[in-house]
Length: 262
Image (cartoon, rainbow, N blue to C red; front, top):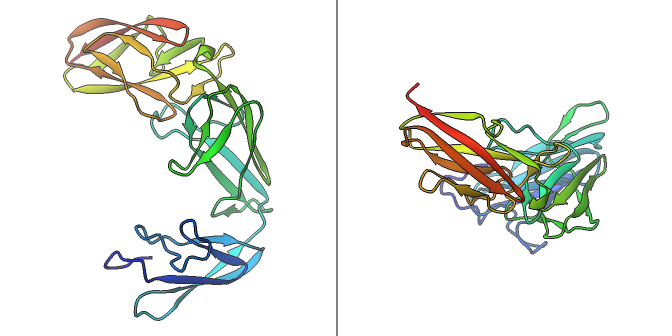
């Protein structure tokens, strides 16, 4: 939906049949069913079948949109990473650092395998740890206690294995193992490198974790972001070969940064 003035406060929406309209904000009886900034209206399926969404703008005639709903036949849940292209979507079980927030994406199909729009409701089953939905990030937040929790849908179960930084057994930088030269182009400013930690069984650990300690002051430093892959900035104006020592959890590794003009 679009509004030329960007003011959605007077827009209204209603639904009939197999769909319902979700109110914006904490008041389930709120009049304004549009997000005041984006103009989004949220529709939920209340039954399998056909529904009709009716939208009325300021001074406009009602516009109607037919929407069909179907019973979910299958759901796939993955933890996603938009930061490091080398990190694929992670399927269950996903190993997550304590005090981290991970984005969970889902895809749904009907009983014939046809893709469905929207998301099915998820429930958190707590184990020894604490995991909850974080609306500010649209992700799921792990607590400070290690343990296992499950995100469960009608046709899906994503296990989150929450661990501390003491679970780190090894880590790489941009996929380069310790003692392997990491090539960078000289003089291009700060390069972003990604630290990928693994446990003793070779499972990738996601989330910021505790701060790595980088012993290369003025040349390399870890970022303080909250993405699922910890990154590090390296100043590429440094010429030639530079040793890099990184300590994370109980592990210390030696790397070498090599800059050249290619």
